[in-house]
Amino acid sequence: MMHKTPFILLILILIICASPKAAAAQNSDGSIVFDCEVTQSGGLLIKAESDEQLLECSTDGGRSFFTVPSRGLYMSSLPAGSYNVSLRKQKSENSRTDTVSVLIPGERDDSIYRFRCTGTPEYAYKSGTLKVTLTDYNPEKAYLISLDHGGTYTRACGRDTLFEGLSGGYYDVVVKTIGSPSRSPVLRAFVPYCPSKGMVNILAKPILQLPELPTGCEITSLAMALRFYGFNIDKTVLADYFLEKSEYRTSDFNSTFVGDPRSYNAYGCYSPVIVNCARRFLDGTKRHFDVNDLTGCDFEECLGYLNMGYPVIVWVTMGMAEPVENSAVWMNRDNGEIVRWVGNEHCVLLTGYDSHGHIAICCDPLKGRIGYDSRIFKQRFEQMGCQAIAIVETTDKG
Image (cartoon, rainbow, N blue to C red):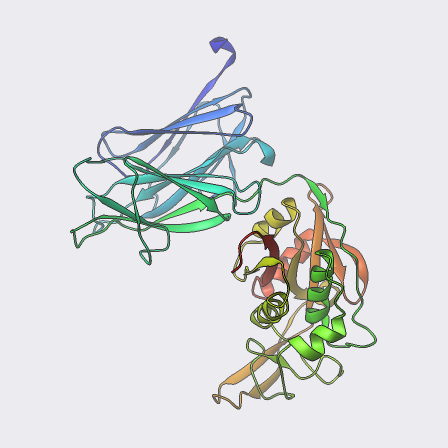
């Protein structure tokens, strides 16, 4: 069978080690396998094995891909930093391999600790894994590994340490040994989100904000998310009893809802306010939930939650119109800072997408269930600060 399996060699100058080491990654059906081998000269040799000739490679965790010529690929003059390498069949997201993270250290980086990371996708909530392999492992040393830039450390389990129960996203991995003041450079490793399924449509019931809440798109979107989980809670009850509000043009929309959502003469709020409101409500129930503020995430992370069956509250604009910078400006009475409101701000519940038709499906508090051009939807999402909230039921409190 070997004669049916072409090999494509990719040479990526990713300096992480001086001695040859290898790591393997593959996609879920095993049709693409690639090995990473560190060369004596400090390069990284990738041997790719696939049942198809045309492959694409990514070095940024799957955000972008480039075609791999049949004769192989050579990349030089790459800057110092982390690279998250994965392969897929040409334009086939579902064939993507696991991600292997490698590091090009800068001139002043500590070269004592050398390691690599392999991330596997999060197919269910917090089901992703990250394997940290110590390439220069010494059994006489006690190694510590951190996934949060050195905030907390876990004792390494030999050469390979597997971290399970992870959400999709980036992790800042640091390695050190007990008793040593030095530590490794930070390797920004990636746990892939659930692979795109092409089309997802979660059945959440639309709720309109009008006429009771003319400026209450955020709290209405939360009400739809809670209704999705079976809570018979009215949008007005959330607005009146669980939403923290402040007087018109007196505070910051990251701290409170500016004005009253029952009034046309109000503005709104951003994700931290709705996160606090959701937690305040859910803490009084007998069920357990994680309220995840995803603000700052890639749009693909929102799609990853949809793939796993969870709708996502996102900030965009009304009717996907252009946002208006500094449409209103006032002073925060609490600290004297200037507050600048973005006009056309809007909040919806994202419930699905069609990647082939470029459609983002959502429950819009102003229009009901509607589809928008996903490319414009993503652009507005990014212009509004990549704000998103995912509520996920769990088995543990807190």
